[in-house]
Amino acid sequence: MDDRPPLKLMQQISAYRTSQCIHTAVELNIPSHLSHGPQSASELARSTAVEEGLLSRLMDHLVNEDIFARDESARYELTEVSRFLLPESANSLHPWVECELHPLYWQAWTHLTEQLRSGTPAFELAHGRSFFDYLSRDQMARKRFDAEMRAASLGMGRLVAQQLDFPEGTTIVDVGGGDGYFLAQVLKRNPGTKGILFELPRTNDDFHPDMTDMIRNQRAIVEYGSFFESLPPGGDAYVFSRVFHDFDDAAISQVLEKARAAMRTQARLFIIDMMLERTQANTGKSSQDMVMMLLLGGRERTREEFCQLLAKEGFECISTTPTNTPLRILEFRHGVINGEPAT
Ligand SMILES: C[S@@+](CC[C@H](N)C(=O)[O-])C[C@H]1O[C@@H](n2cnc3c(N)ncnc32)[C@H](O)[C@@H]1O
Image (cartoon, rainbow, N blue to C red; front, side, top):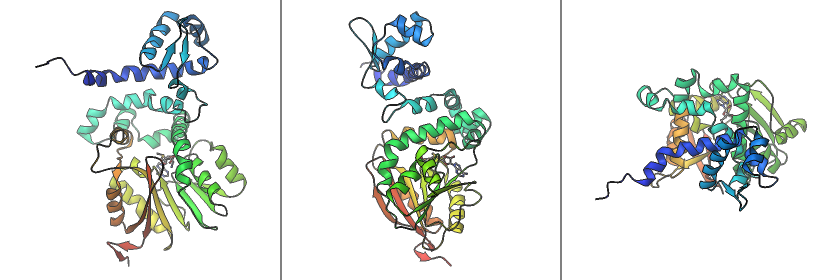
C-alpha cells in the first residue's frame, strides 16, 4: 500500500500561497510593468520599488506556476495567462484579484469554523457588520466590489441582456443593479424602454459610463432604498440579477413580499443567477456557494429550489432561458398561490 500523502491534497492545502503571490504581483502592478516588454529582476525591482532578491523569488514561483515566463536572458515576461491580470485587458481578472484576495475577504475565511458553529456569516464575525452594511460605509471596498461585479458582468452581462426582449414602453426595474452596467445593456437592446436602478444608498454616484449616458438621455433614473423595506412601484419587469444568491430563504421571502406589493398584476419578475444542478458535481459552482455562505450567509440554488421558494410567495415560473454563460434567466408571474389565483 502506498502511504505517501496524496499530491492533490497537498496542492489543495497550499493553494493559498499562490493566491497570495498573485495578489502581491497585482498590487505591485507587475503585469502592467511587463506589458511593454520583458524585464530583468533588477529592472522590475526598480519599476516596483521593492527588494530585487525577494522579488525574483516571488516571480520564480509564479513562473513555475505558468503565470509569468522567463526568457533565455532570464528576463520576466507576460504569458497568455498573465495578460488577464492587466487591468485594461478584455475580460480582465484584475478586479477579481483586487477584491477576492483583499485582506477583507481573507480575514473572513479565518472565521469559517466559527460560522459553522454559530450560523453567523464569517464576514460579520470578522468585521462586526454585515457585508453590504460594511460596503455602504467603506467607499474603497464598495468600489472594489462594484468593479468585481462589473468584470463578471462585462463578460456575461451583455450576453444575458441579449436574451431579454421587452416591448416599447416597458419600465424595467433592476433591483440591486450595482453600478447600472447591466441595466444599460438591457436598455440599449430594447429601444423605447425605460429603466429604474434600485440600489442601497451609497457615498458616491459612481455609475458605469453606459448607465451615466442612460441617465443623461432620460432613459434611466436611480432610486435608493432597501428591498427589505419597499421596491419602486409600477414597473413592468423587476429584474434580480445575481441578487438572491446573496441571501437565505427567509430574507428572500421578505423581499418577495415587498416585490408583490410593488408589482401590478401584469408585471413580471426575472431572476438571473447561476443555478446548481442536482445531478452534477457542480464543479466551480460549489466554491462560489462557499463564498456566498461566508460573506453573506447566502447560497447558490437549483432552478427547482428557486421555483419552490417563489411559489410559496405566490409566484409561478413561466419560462426558463439558458444563456451562453453560467447564468440562467427565470421569469415569474405573480398572483398565484399553489397554482390558484391569490385572493
Ligand atoms: C451580487 S451584487 C449584483 C449586482 C448586479 N445586479 C450584477 O448582476 O452585477 C448584489 C447587489 O445587491 C445590492 N443590495 C444588497 N442589499 C440590498 C438591499 N437591501 N436593497 C437594495 N440593494 C441591495 C448590493 O449593493 C449589490 O450591488
